[in-house]
Length: 251
Length: 251
DNA sequence: CGGAACGTTGAGGAGAATCAATTATAGTGG
DNA sequence: CCACTATAATTGATTCTCCTCAACGTTCCG
View 1 (cartoon, rainbow over the protein chains, first blue to last red):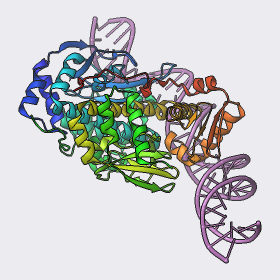
View 2: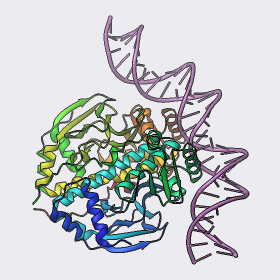
View 3: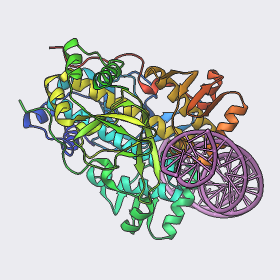
View 4: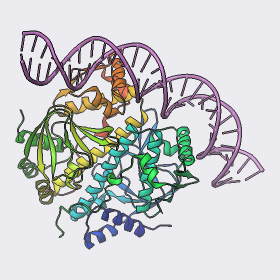
């Protein structure tokens, strides 16, 4: 089980990876009041285009951002780990830019926009950090466009496995050699722009090559360097190379 | 020809579409000092991953954001119109999250980060507006992942033509029935995740169906409703439905 | 224990890529 | 102004990746 305080700590830590925060700013984040929600697997947490007055902080589980076609077909456009604020952007743009769906059993802490806005208004350094995390989201999106637009099934699959490995390590829910990956192959297909059948075949190839495997909710990487090469993976796009320049001077 | 003042006016107008700005905030934006650059077609303006200390405001022309594979293959992940700040995100994250390339002859106004940061620090309302525009970028990225991941060639092509139509109208460089589109079919292919050959065939189909055409630097839409239907297009993702909630109280 | 969801595998087909050649267009310098 | 060149658009033929449809095996959970 995870509680609000621990979730907020993870969130603050996530922000700190990309932004410099003062102690008082950090404390202001930890003082947020949330509403906890336990959500079963494969439920919509926020519907595509829905107007919301809170943001979803992931406590446990794996959350997918998705876009939806008029015929109901879905594309997962990003994944959120524990400690991530899945729809931070709705703070400044309340018509959620994407839907959120639980890929497994998930704990969500709803953080009211009222509080986040007050926090941002009174602590410009926090606002800056939130802005920067939205920028990181954008960078990851851009790489995902590249992934589904210009790489073949093998490469896409490897790329996603690499990203998930690094992020699992960061979120401290595994390491790049072996990490929990509690999502179905169908969801993996929605994230890579493939079909579930083809994901299955591609994973089989990676297994047969002794590069990586993914089953029963766990990914195992046998040969990291080859996985990186196959996936054309360069982690720079996740903006994890240390904090950016502080714009607002500490109070 | 376009001068710095006009470009900044367009930029301020673009921000105003999504955020409420006070007169003094607007004036602070118009007071920015820039360096102008005229750039020929098909040149890299900012290389993928390059560290920059300025952001690129598009004055004239069409700019593509791109990601690049290790083998040099490119995917255009977004397009920037006159009045757009193409790499606004580098203000808070100076290792540019994407490369910028000119799709035709382009006028760029370089805005030093030093100035933008000072502007953001002294005018929190402006910082908020910049943040919100970065969020809009993210929303558009997400839709692009959907586009290249889950739509077929016909639908992708139509969707992009729709987006470009709406944005041309907004940028006042055309209307949705007929607008300048000075990019090659090759660039169009890089934006849709297709090959130039297949883009050509798909455009021919749209032409034969009397839905839309695109040649000699101009797109013409004969049947907007059908184009929207084919492209599975819903403009909400561009966040152009009026300004978001103001977080920071005006000074 | 039974059912539902998920994973696996095969066969066949569709859509887009690739390869290749030709035509159009725009830009360049004589 | 026109030849010359490079770039872009167009079309055909062929190949291949991935999708679709279908069946069966496995795992998980009530």
